[in-house]
Image (cartoon, rainbow, N blue to C red; front, side, top):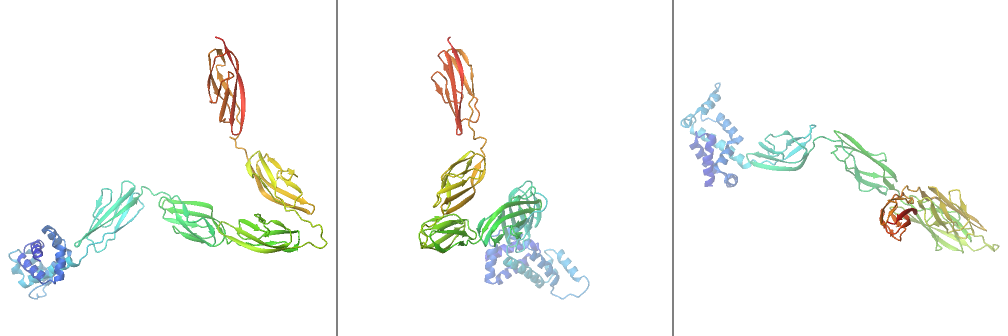
Length: 552
């Protein structure tokens, strides 16, 4: 502890002004000597590496020492004073005016030692137990552009502050408003200090906006479809720093959270509307039918008959819930994807019918039994009704659209087609041309001696308008010159319309070219017929002209 004693002795004289340096030194020695070992170690760790200047400044800036010195001088005396007016004021003034030679005679040695011991004790305890600050601050954005409010929230009672705002500007105020010269992201540093030490904190990317802009509302969600009950997490994707949010989920529910979670309890298509706001204004975005919520898929169907004699014609009717696809297994090795098909059972037997329905989330099935009994004794010529069905080689395209229809009917001997454009056919597999754009419903009636059955497919054929660029080219060209003496050099220029993609020139002198604008040299006199053929994916067209070549 010898180094500590020496440093303290030389440093204390600064704040005692040298007037009682001998008493101070001796009192400090005694105080340090009487300290418990634990406190000696703490004191050594605190000041052992300080220079004299640092230690002097450390004591001189200590508010506890200053207050203790003043209060102790006012309250300590070896003789209790009389309560005369102004006694303590005069005594304090007297002490303050003493020189180093007469201060010891002004106060008794016991009083001086008491003062010094009390003051030194307070200063040393402050050194030992006061903690350095933990620097921290918050920011807020006032209405003025480019301006940020900085608020110190450091702990452990700092007494000084040093700010670095990241734009070459600093400050020593505790709380302040700083205006930046331009927008951007800045790194701000605060150093908070007290007599026990200092601490620094740094915050990066503090955003400074030149002017507050109206937000541009946008959002996303973790899902856009699913089975009810469907929980959806919505995420604000707006720009320009909104501070308020308003959601309408399309099912009568709303929220003002920035990133809410919402549950759709019923199946349906829901339009979501989102408004983002700040002090500059608000903006709204709406996404139509954004959320598709499906209910539980439940397979269900009925049949017009479940038990009868063969040939047994059964009409199946679908009553499934939330289904988008159907797959019928009739139990006799045949199937159908129609929603409500008709099926004929023959021969007799017991058939297990299975309907499987699907949507984008799940599947479900239902079974039923159809009993086809044998022929009646008096039914020697059973009547088997046909089951109409058909397909086609294509279902859409530009006009004119030629379609090959194919009958898939069962037990049919006659066919009657209605193509939906007021035309009909009785051929089993007809070819039909649609000349006018539109959507056409096609119906096929299949018949036999027992009766008939019809199947209709709504908007089955879609005929699109002919795009303007889908036309055949029209060939045309010019030549310069069109006559002259041999050798005659002629420049041909294509003037065709309809966007040709290929050119074929026959110059009439047994030479050809596939260039768009070729040059040909004629070496034989005579009239040469030039032919140009142009082609694109919609057709071909040709044109001719004559070049006259004379002898030199």
